[in-house]
Amino acid sequence: MDLTLKVWRQASSETEGEFKTYPASNVSPDASFLEMLDEVNEHLNEIGEEPIAFDSDCREGICGTCGLMINGYPHGPQDGTATCQLHMRKFNDGDSITIEPWRATAFPVLRDLIVDRSPFDEIIQAGGYISVNTGAAQDANNLPVPKEAADASMDAAACIGCAACVAACPNSAANLFTAAKMQQLNLLPQGNPERYSRAVAMVETMEQYFGSCTNHGECEKACPKNISIDFIGMMNRDYVKAQFKFTARDAQNKGK
Amino acid sequence: MTTTERRPNVHRRQRWEDWLGGFFSSSVGLKWLMAITGIGLLLYVLAHMIGNLKMFQGAYEGGEYAIDLYGEALRSLGGDLVPHESILWIFRIGLILAFVIHIGASAALTKRNWDARGTDRYEAQRHYAAANYASRTMRWGGIIILLFLLYHLADLTFGWANPDFVYGAIYDNVVASLSRPPVAILYLVAQVALAFHIYHGGWSLFQSLGFVNPRYNVWRRYFAIGFAALIFIGNTAIILAVWTGAVA
Image (tube, rainbow over the protein chains, first blue to last red):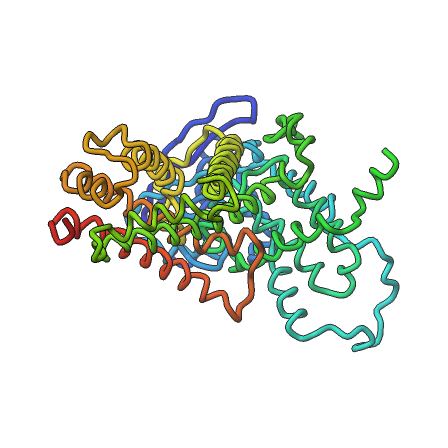
């Protein structure tokens, strides 16, 4: 396959970026999208040009490091996969492919196609954990968990934090990420004691960086793990209910 | 990895937001407010449509129009127990508050969303997979509905836009207005905008309020479609009936 790539090039977050066009020739239809970029980079190395910088790690769709806007689709036109799981056979010989970084105020471009996703870390630091020391693994079934809760929690836990939800959202909202990271804990007995404190802390940290949800559902379609926007509804419910609970924030403000 | 200097937060809390408390300054809280006021406005639109259907009832034997008596009944709610029109004004104030909160919250959220999105746009055409026409036109649709509402008040409540306006003669006023084709077309356009707005809002409100359960999730969409269709059919029936002369 011979393709034409239109790639966003930007030397650093301080400099202006621009689109550059590169030919990609003799691309194997069995190559993954990232392997195709690797080959283009080898060619760029040979001719002495700076290779295209992009994030990748596991290359099997479980780490959430890669993430490109490909022809206007987050992670490309294939449903339920990350960029690394997209194969070139999904494209046609002679195609022109536009490759862009995620766009959001919260995600400044570091270089070319790499963006700084550290606001996601801050959301996790705000409440995406449980404080109790759970000790060594208990015997199975010591702690009863309803099957439905375990399943739903597992669905939320599939989130790999790639930020395709933010990239897809017309409002650059991070509600799907935040909801998944919150509900995977809130649905289980281990996470339940801090449920409402977590809801307040994670939502309010999220809102410092990201837009608000207008319930388009674009994030759900873009998600490589097909995480449902039902979790956003559950997060909204927890945040509303938290207003009537004594949360960690209220404990801090006591006496002020 | 190089660390970039973090840009200022998209959303800095303003003083009024601290006064209103954390919940009502949060985006999730503002969406909750929009859902609650949205429900109030949906109930109003439904009651308004049902009341308007009295246009089809025409005149009683005494020669008085059913809808004129209905209007008088609204003004004299509470009978002699309370001053004339007082109960109606309580409803009107509630309605105005619902509008102000609904529009104010959406304006604040829109500002935040634009800030969060920044100025860098995607080069390639975005392919919307889930967002529909209704969900993407909520802001402009809402503005169209607001502008229509102002005209509608000037037309049939205050009578400024209606040269044949007679206070209390609702039936004649409606017929006089809607017999003019430009006005009838304006009313029809507004009904289309309203139907789209309800199609998304009637579903979205459940999500904002946190009413999520696989058991009834599918009914949220049915509710939105049903409600939008009910309002659209009821209101356009009146407009078309008057325009075509079936009700005159």
